Length: 201
Image 1 (cartoon, rainbow, N blue to C red):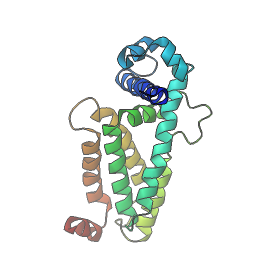
Image 2 (cartoon, one colour):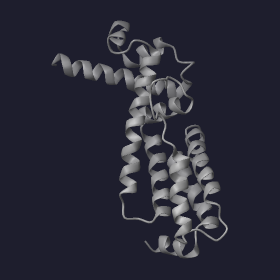
Image 3 (tube, rainbow, N blue to C red):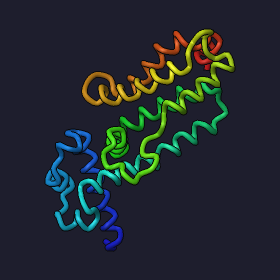
Image 4 (cartoon, rainbow, N blue to C red):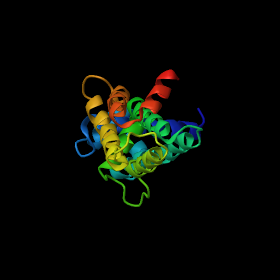
């Protein structure tokens, strides 16, 4: 196997092993020895790729930080109303967090501000993005009269965070919990016309 490809595979093995360990026990409780054992690499090979456990955590944070702008951009370019974009985007975010341990661990590290020094935009500002979409939805008559877009944005973001935490421990997974949250929430905040159109799709 060419040396460059072997180095890439070794680095990826370290990243995935670290993500699995951080996701399972948390950053502080994960010793370097656990990452080495799970990845099957030597300490020398580890230090060839990463200067420290913190540097490895930063690589995970940077990896997730590169992923989210593509997800947001894909949804914002779709020819959908703003409420549908908000719902679809958070549902996809929940699905990706559930399925991709590297993304999940990196997002968790960013949320807890671990190894984020020097990493700009380490976590997407979901609340601001949702608030913009929900204000546009309100202005377009897609929300019921009197519904506060800011409150809905806060609830939706809290649901994403909660779905990630609870969905990884018991019962329905992250994606199913996020979809369930929207189903319940939309009954109280979305206009009857929007709900009717959604059911007919």
